[in-house]
Amino acid sequence: MIHLTADTHILVAIAHADFRQGIDGLAAICRHKLIQNPRSGTVFVLSIAIKPWCVHYHMTALVFG
Image (cartoon, rainbow, N blue to C red; front, side, top):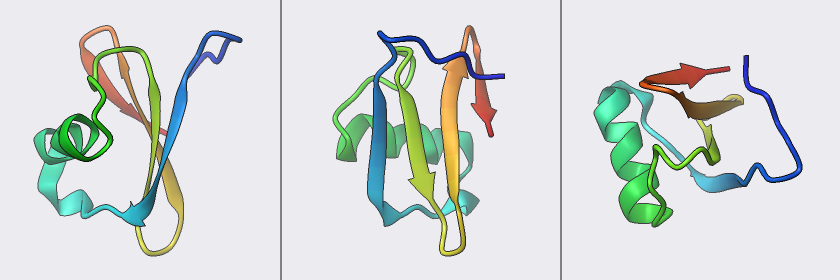
């Protein structure tokens, strides 16, 4: 579960992401296109063609919601 607080940053990507890239590819999108560290605690909302997904690192794992 993703716990949001007043200090949580949320970034929304407006372009569609290719989820076939896997975890490393999605982290690369966060790192290079959104210019953020994927392990910073920021919640990244990435979109596939149909619906948005929340992506968040929790400790050492990538959480999809």
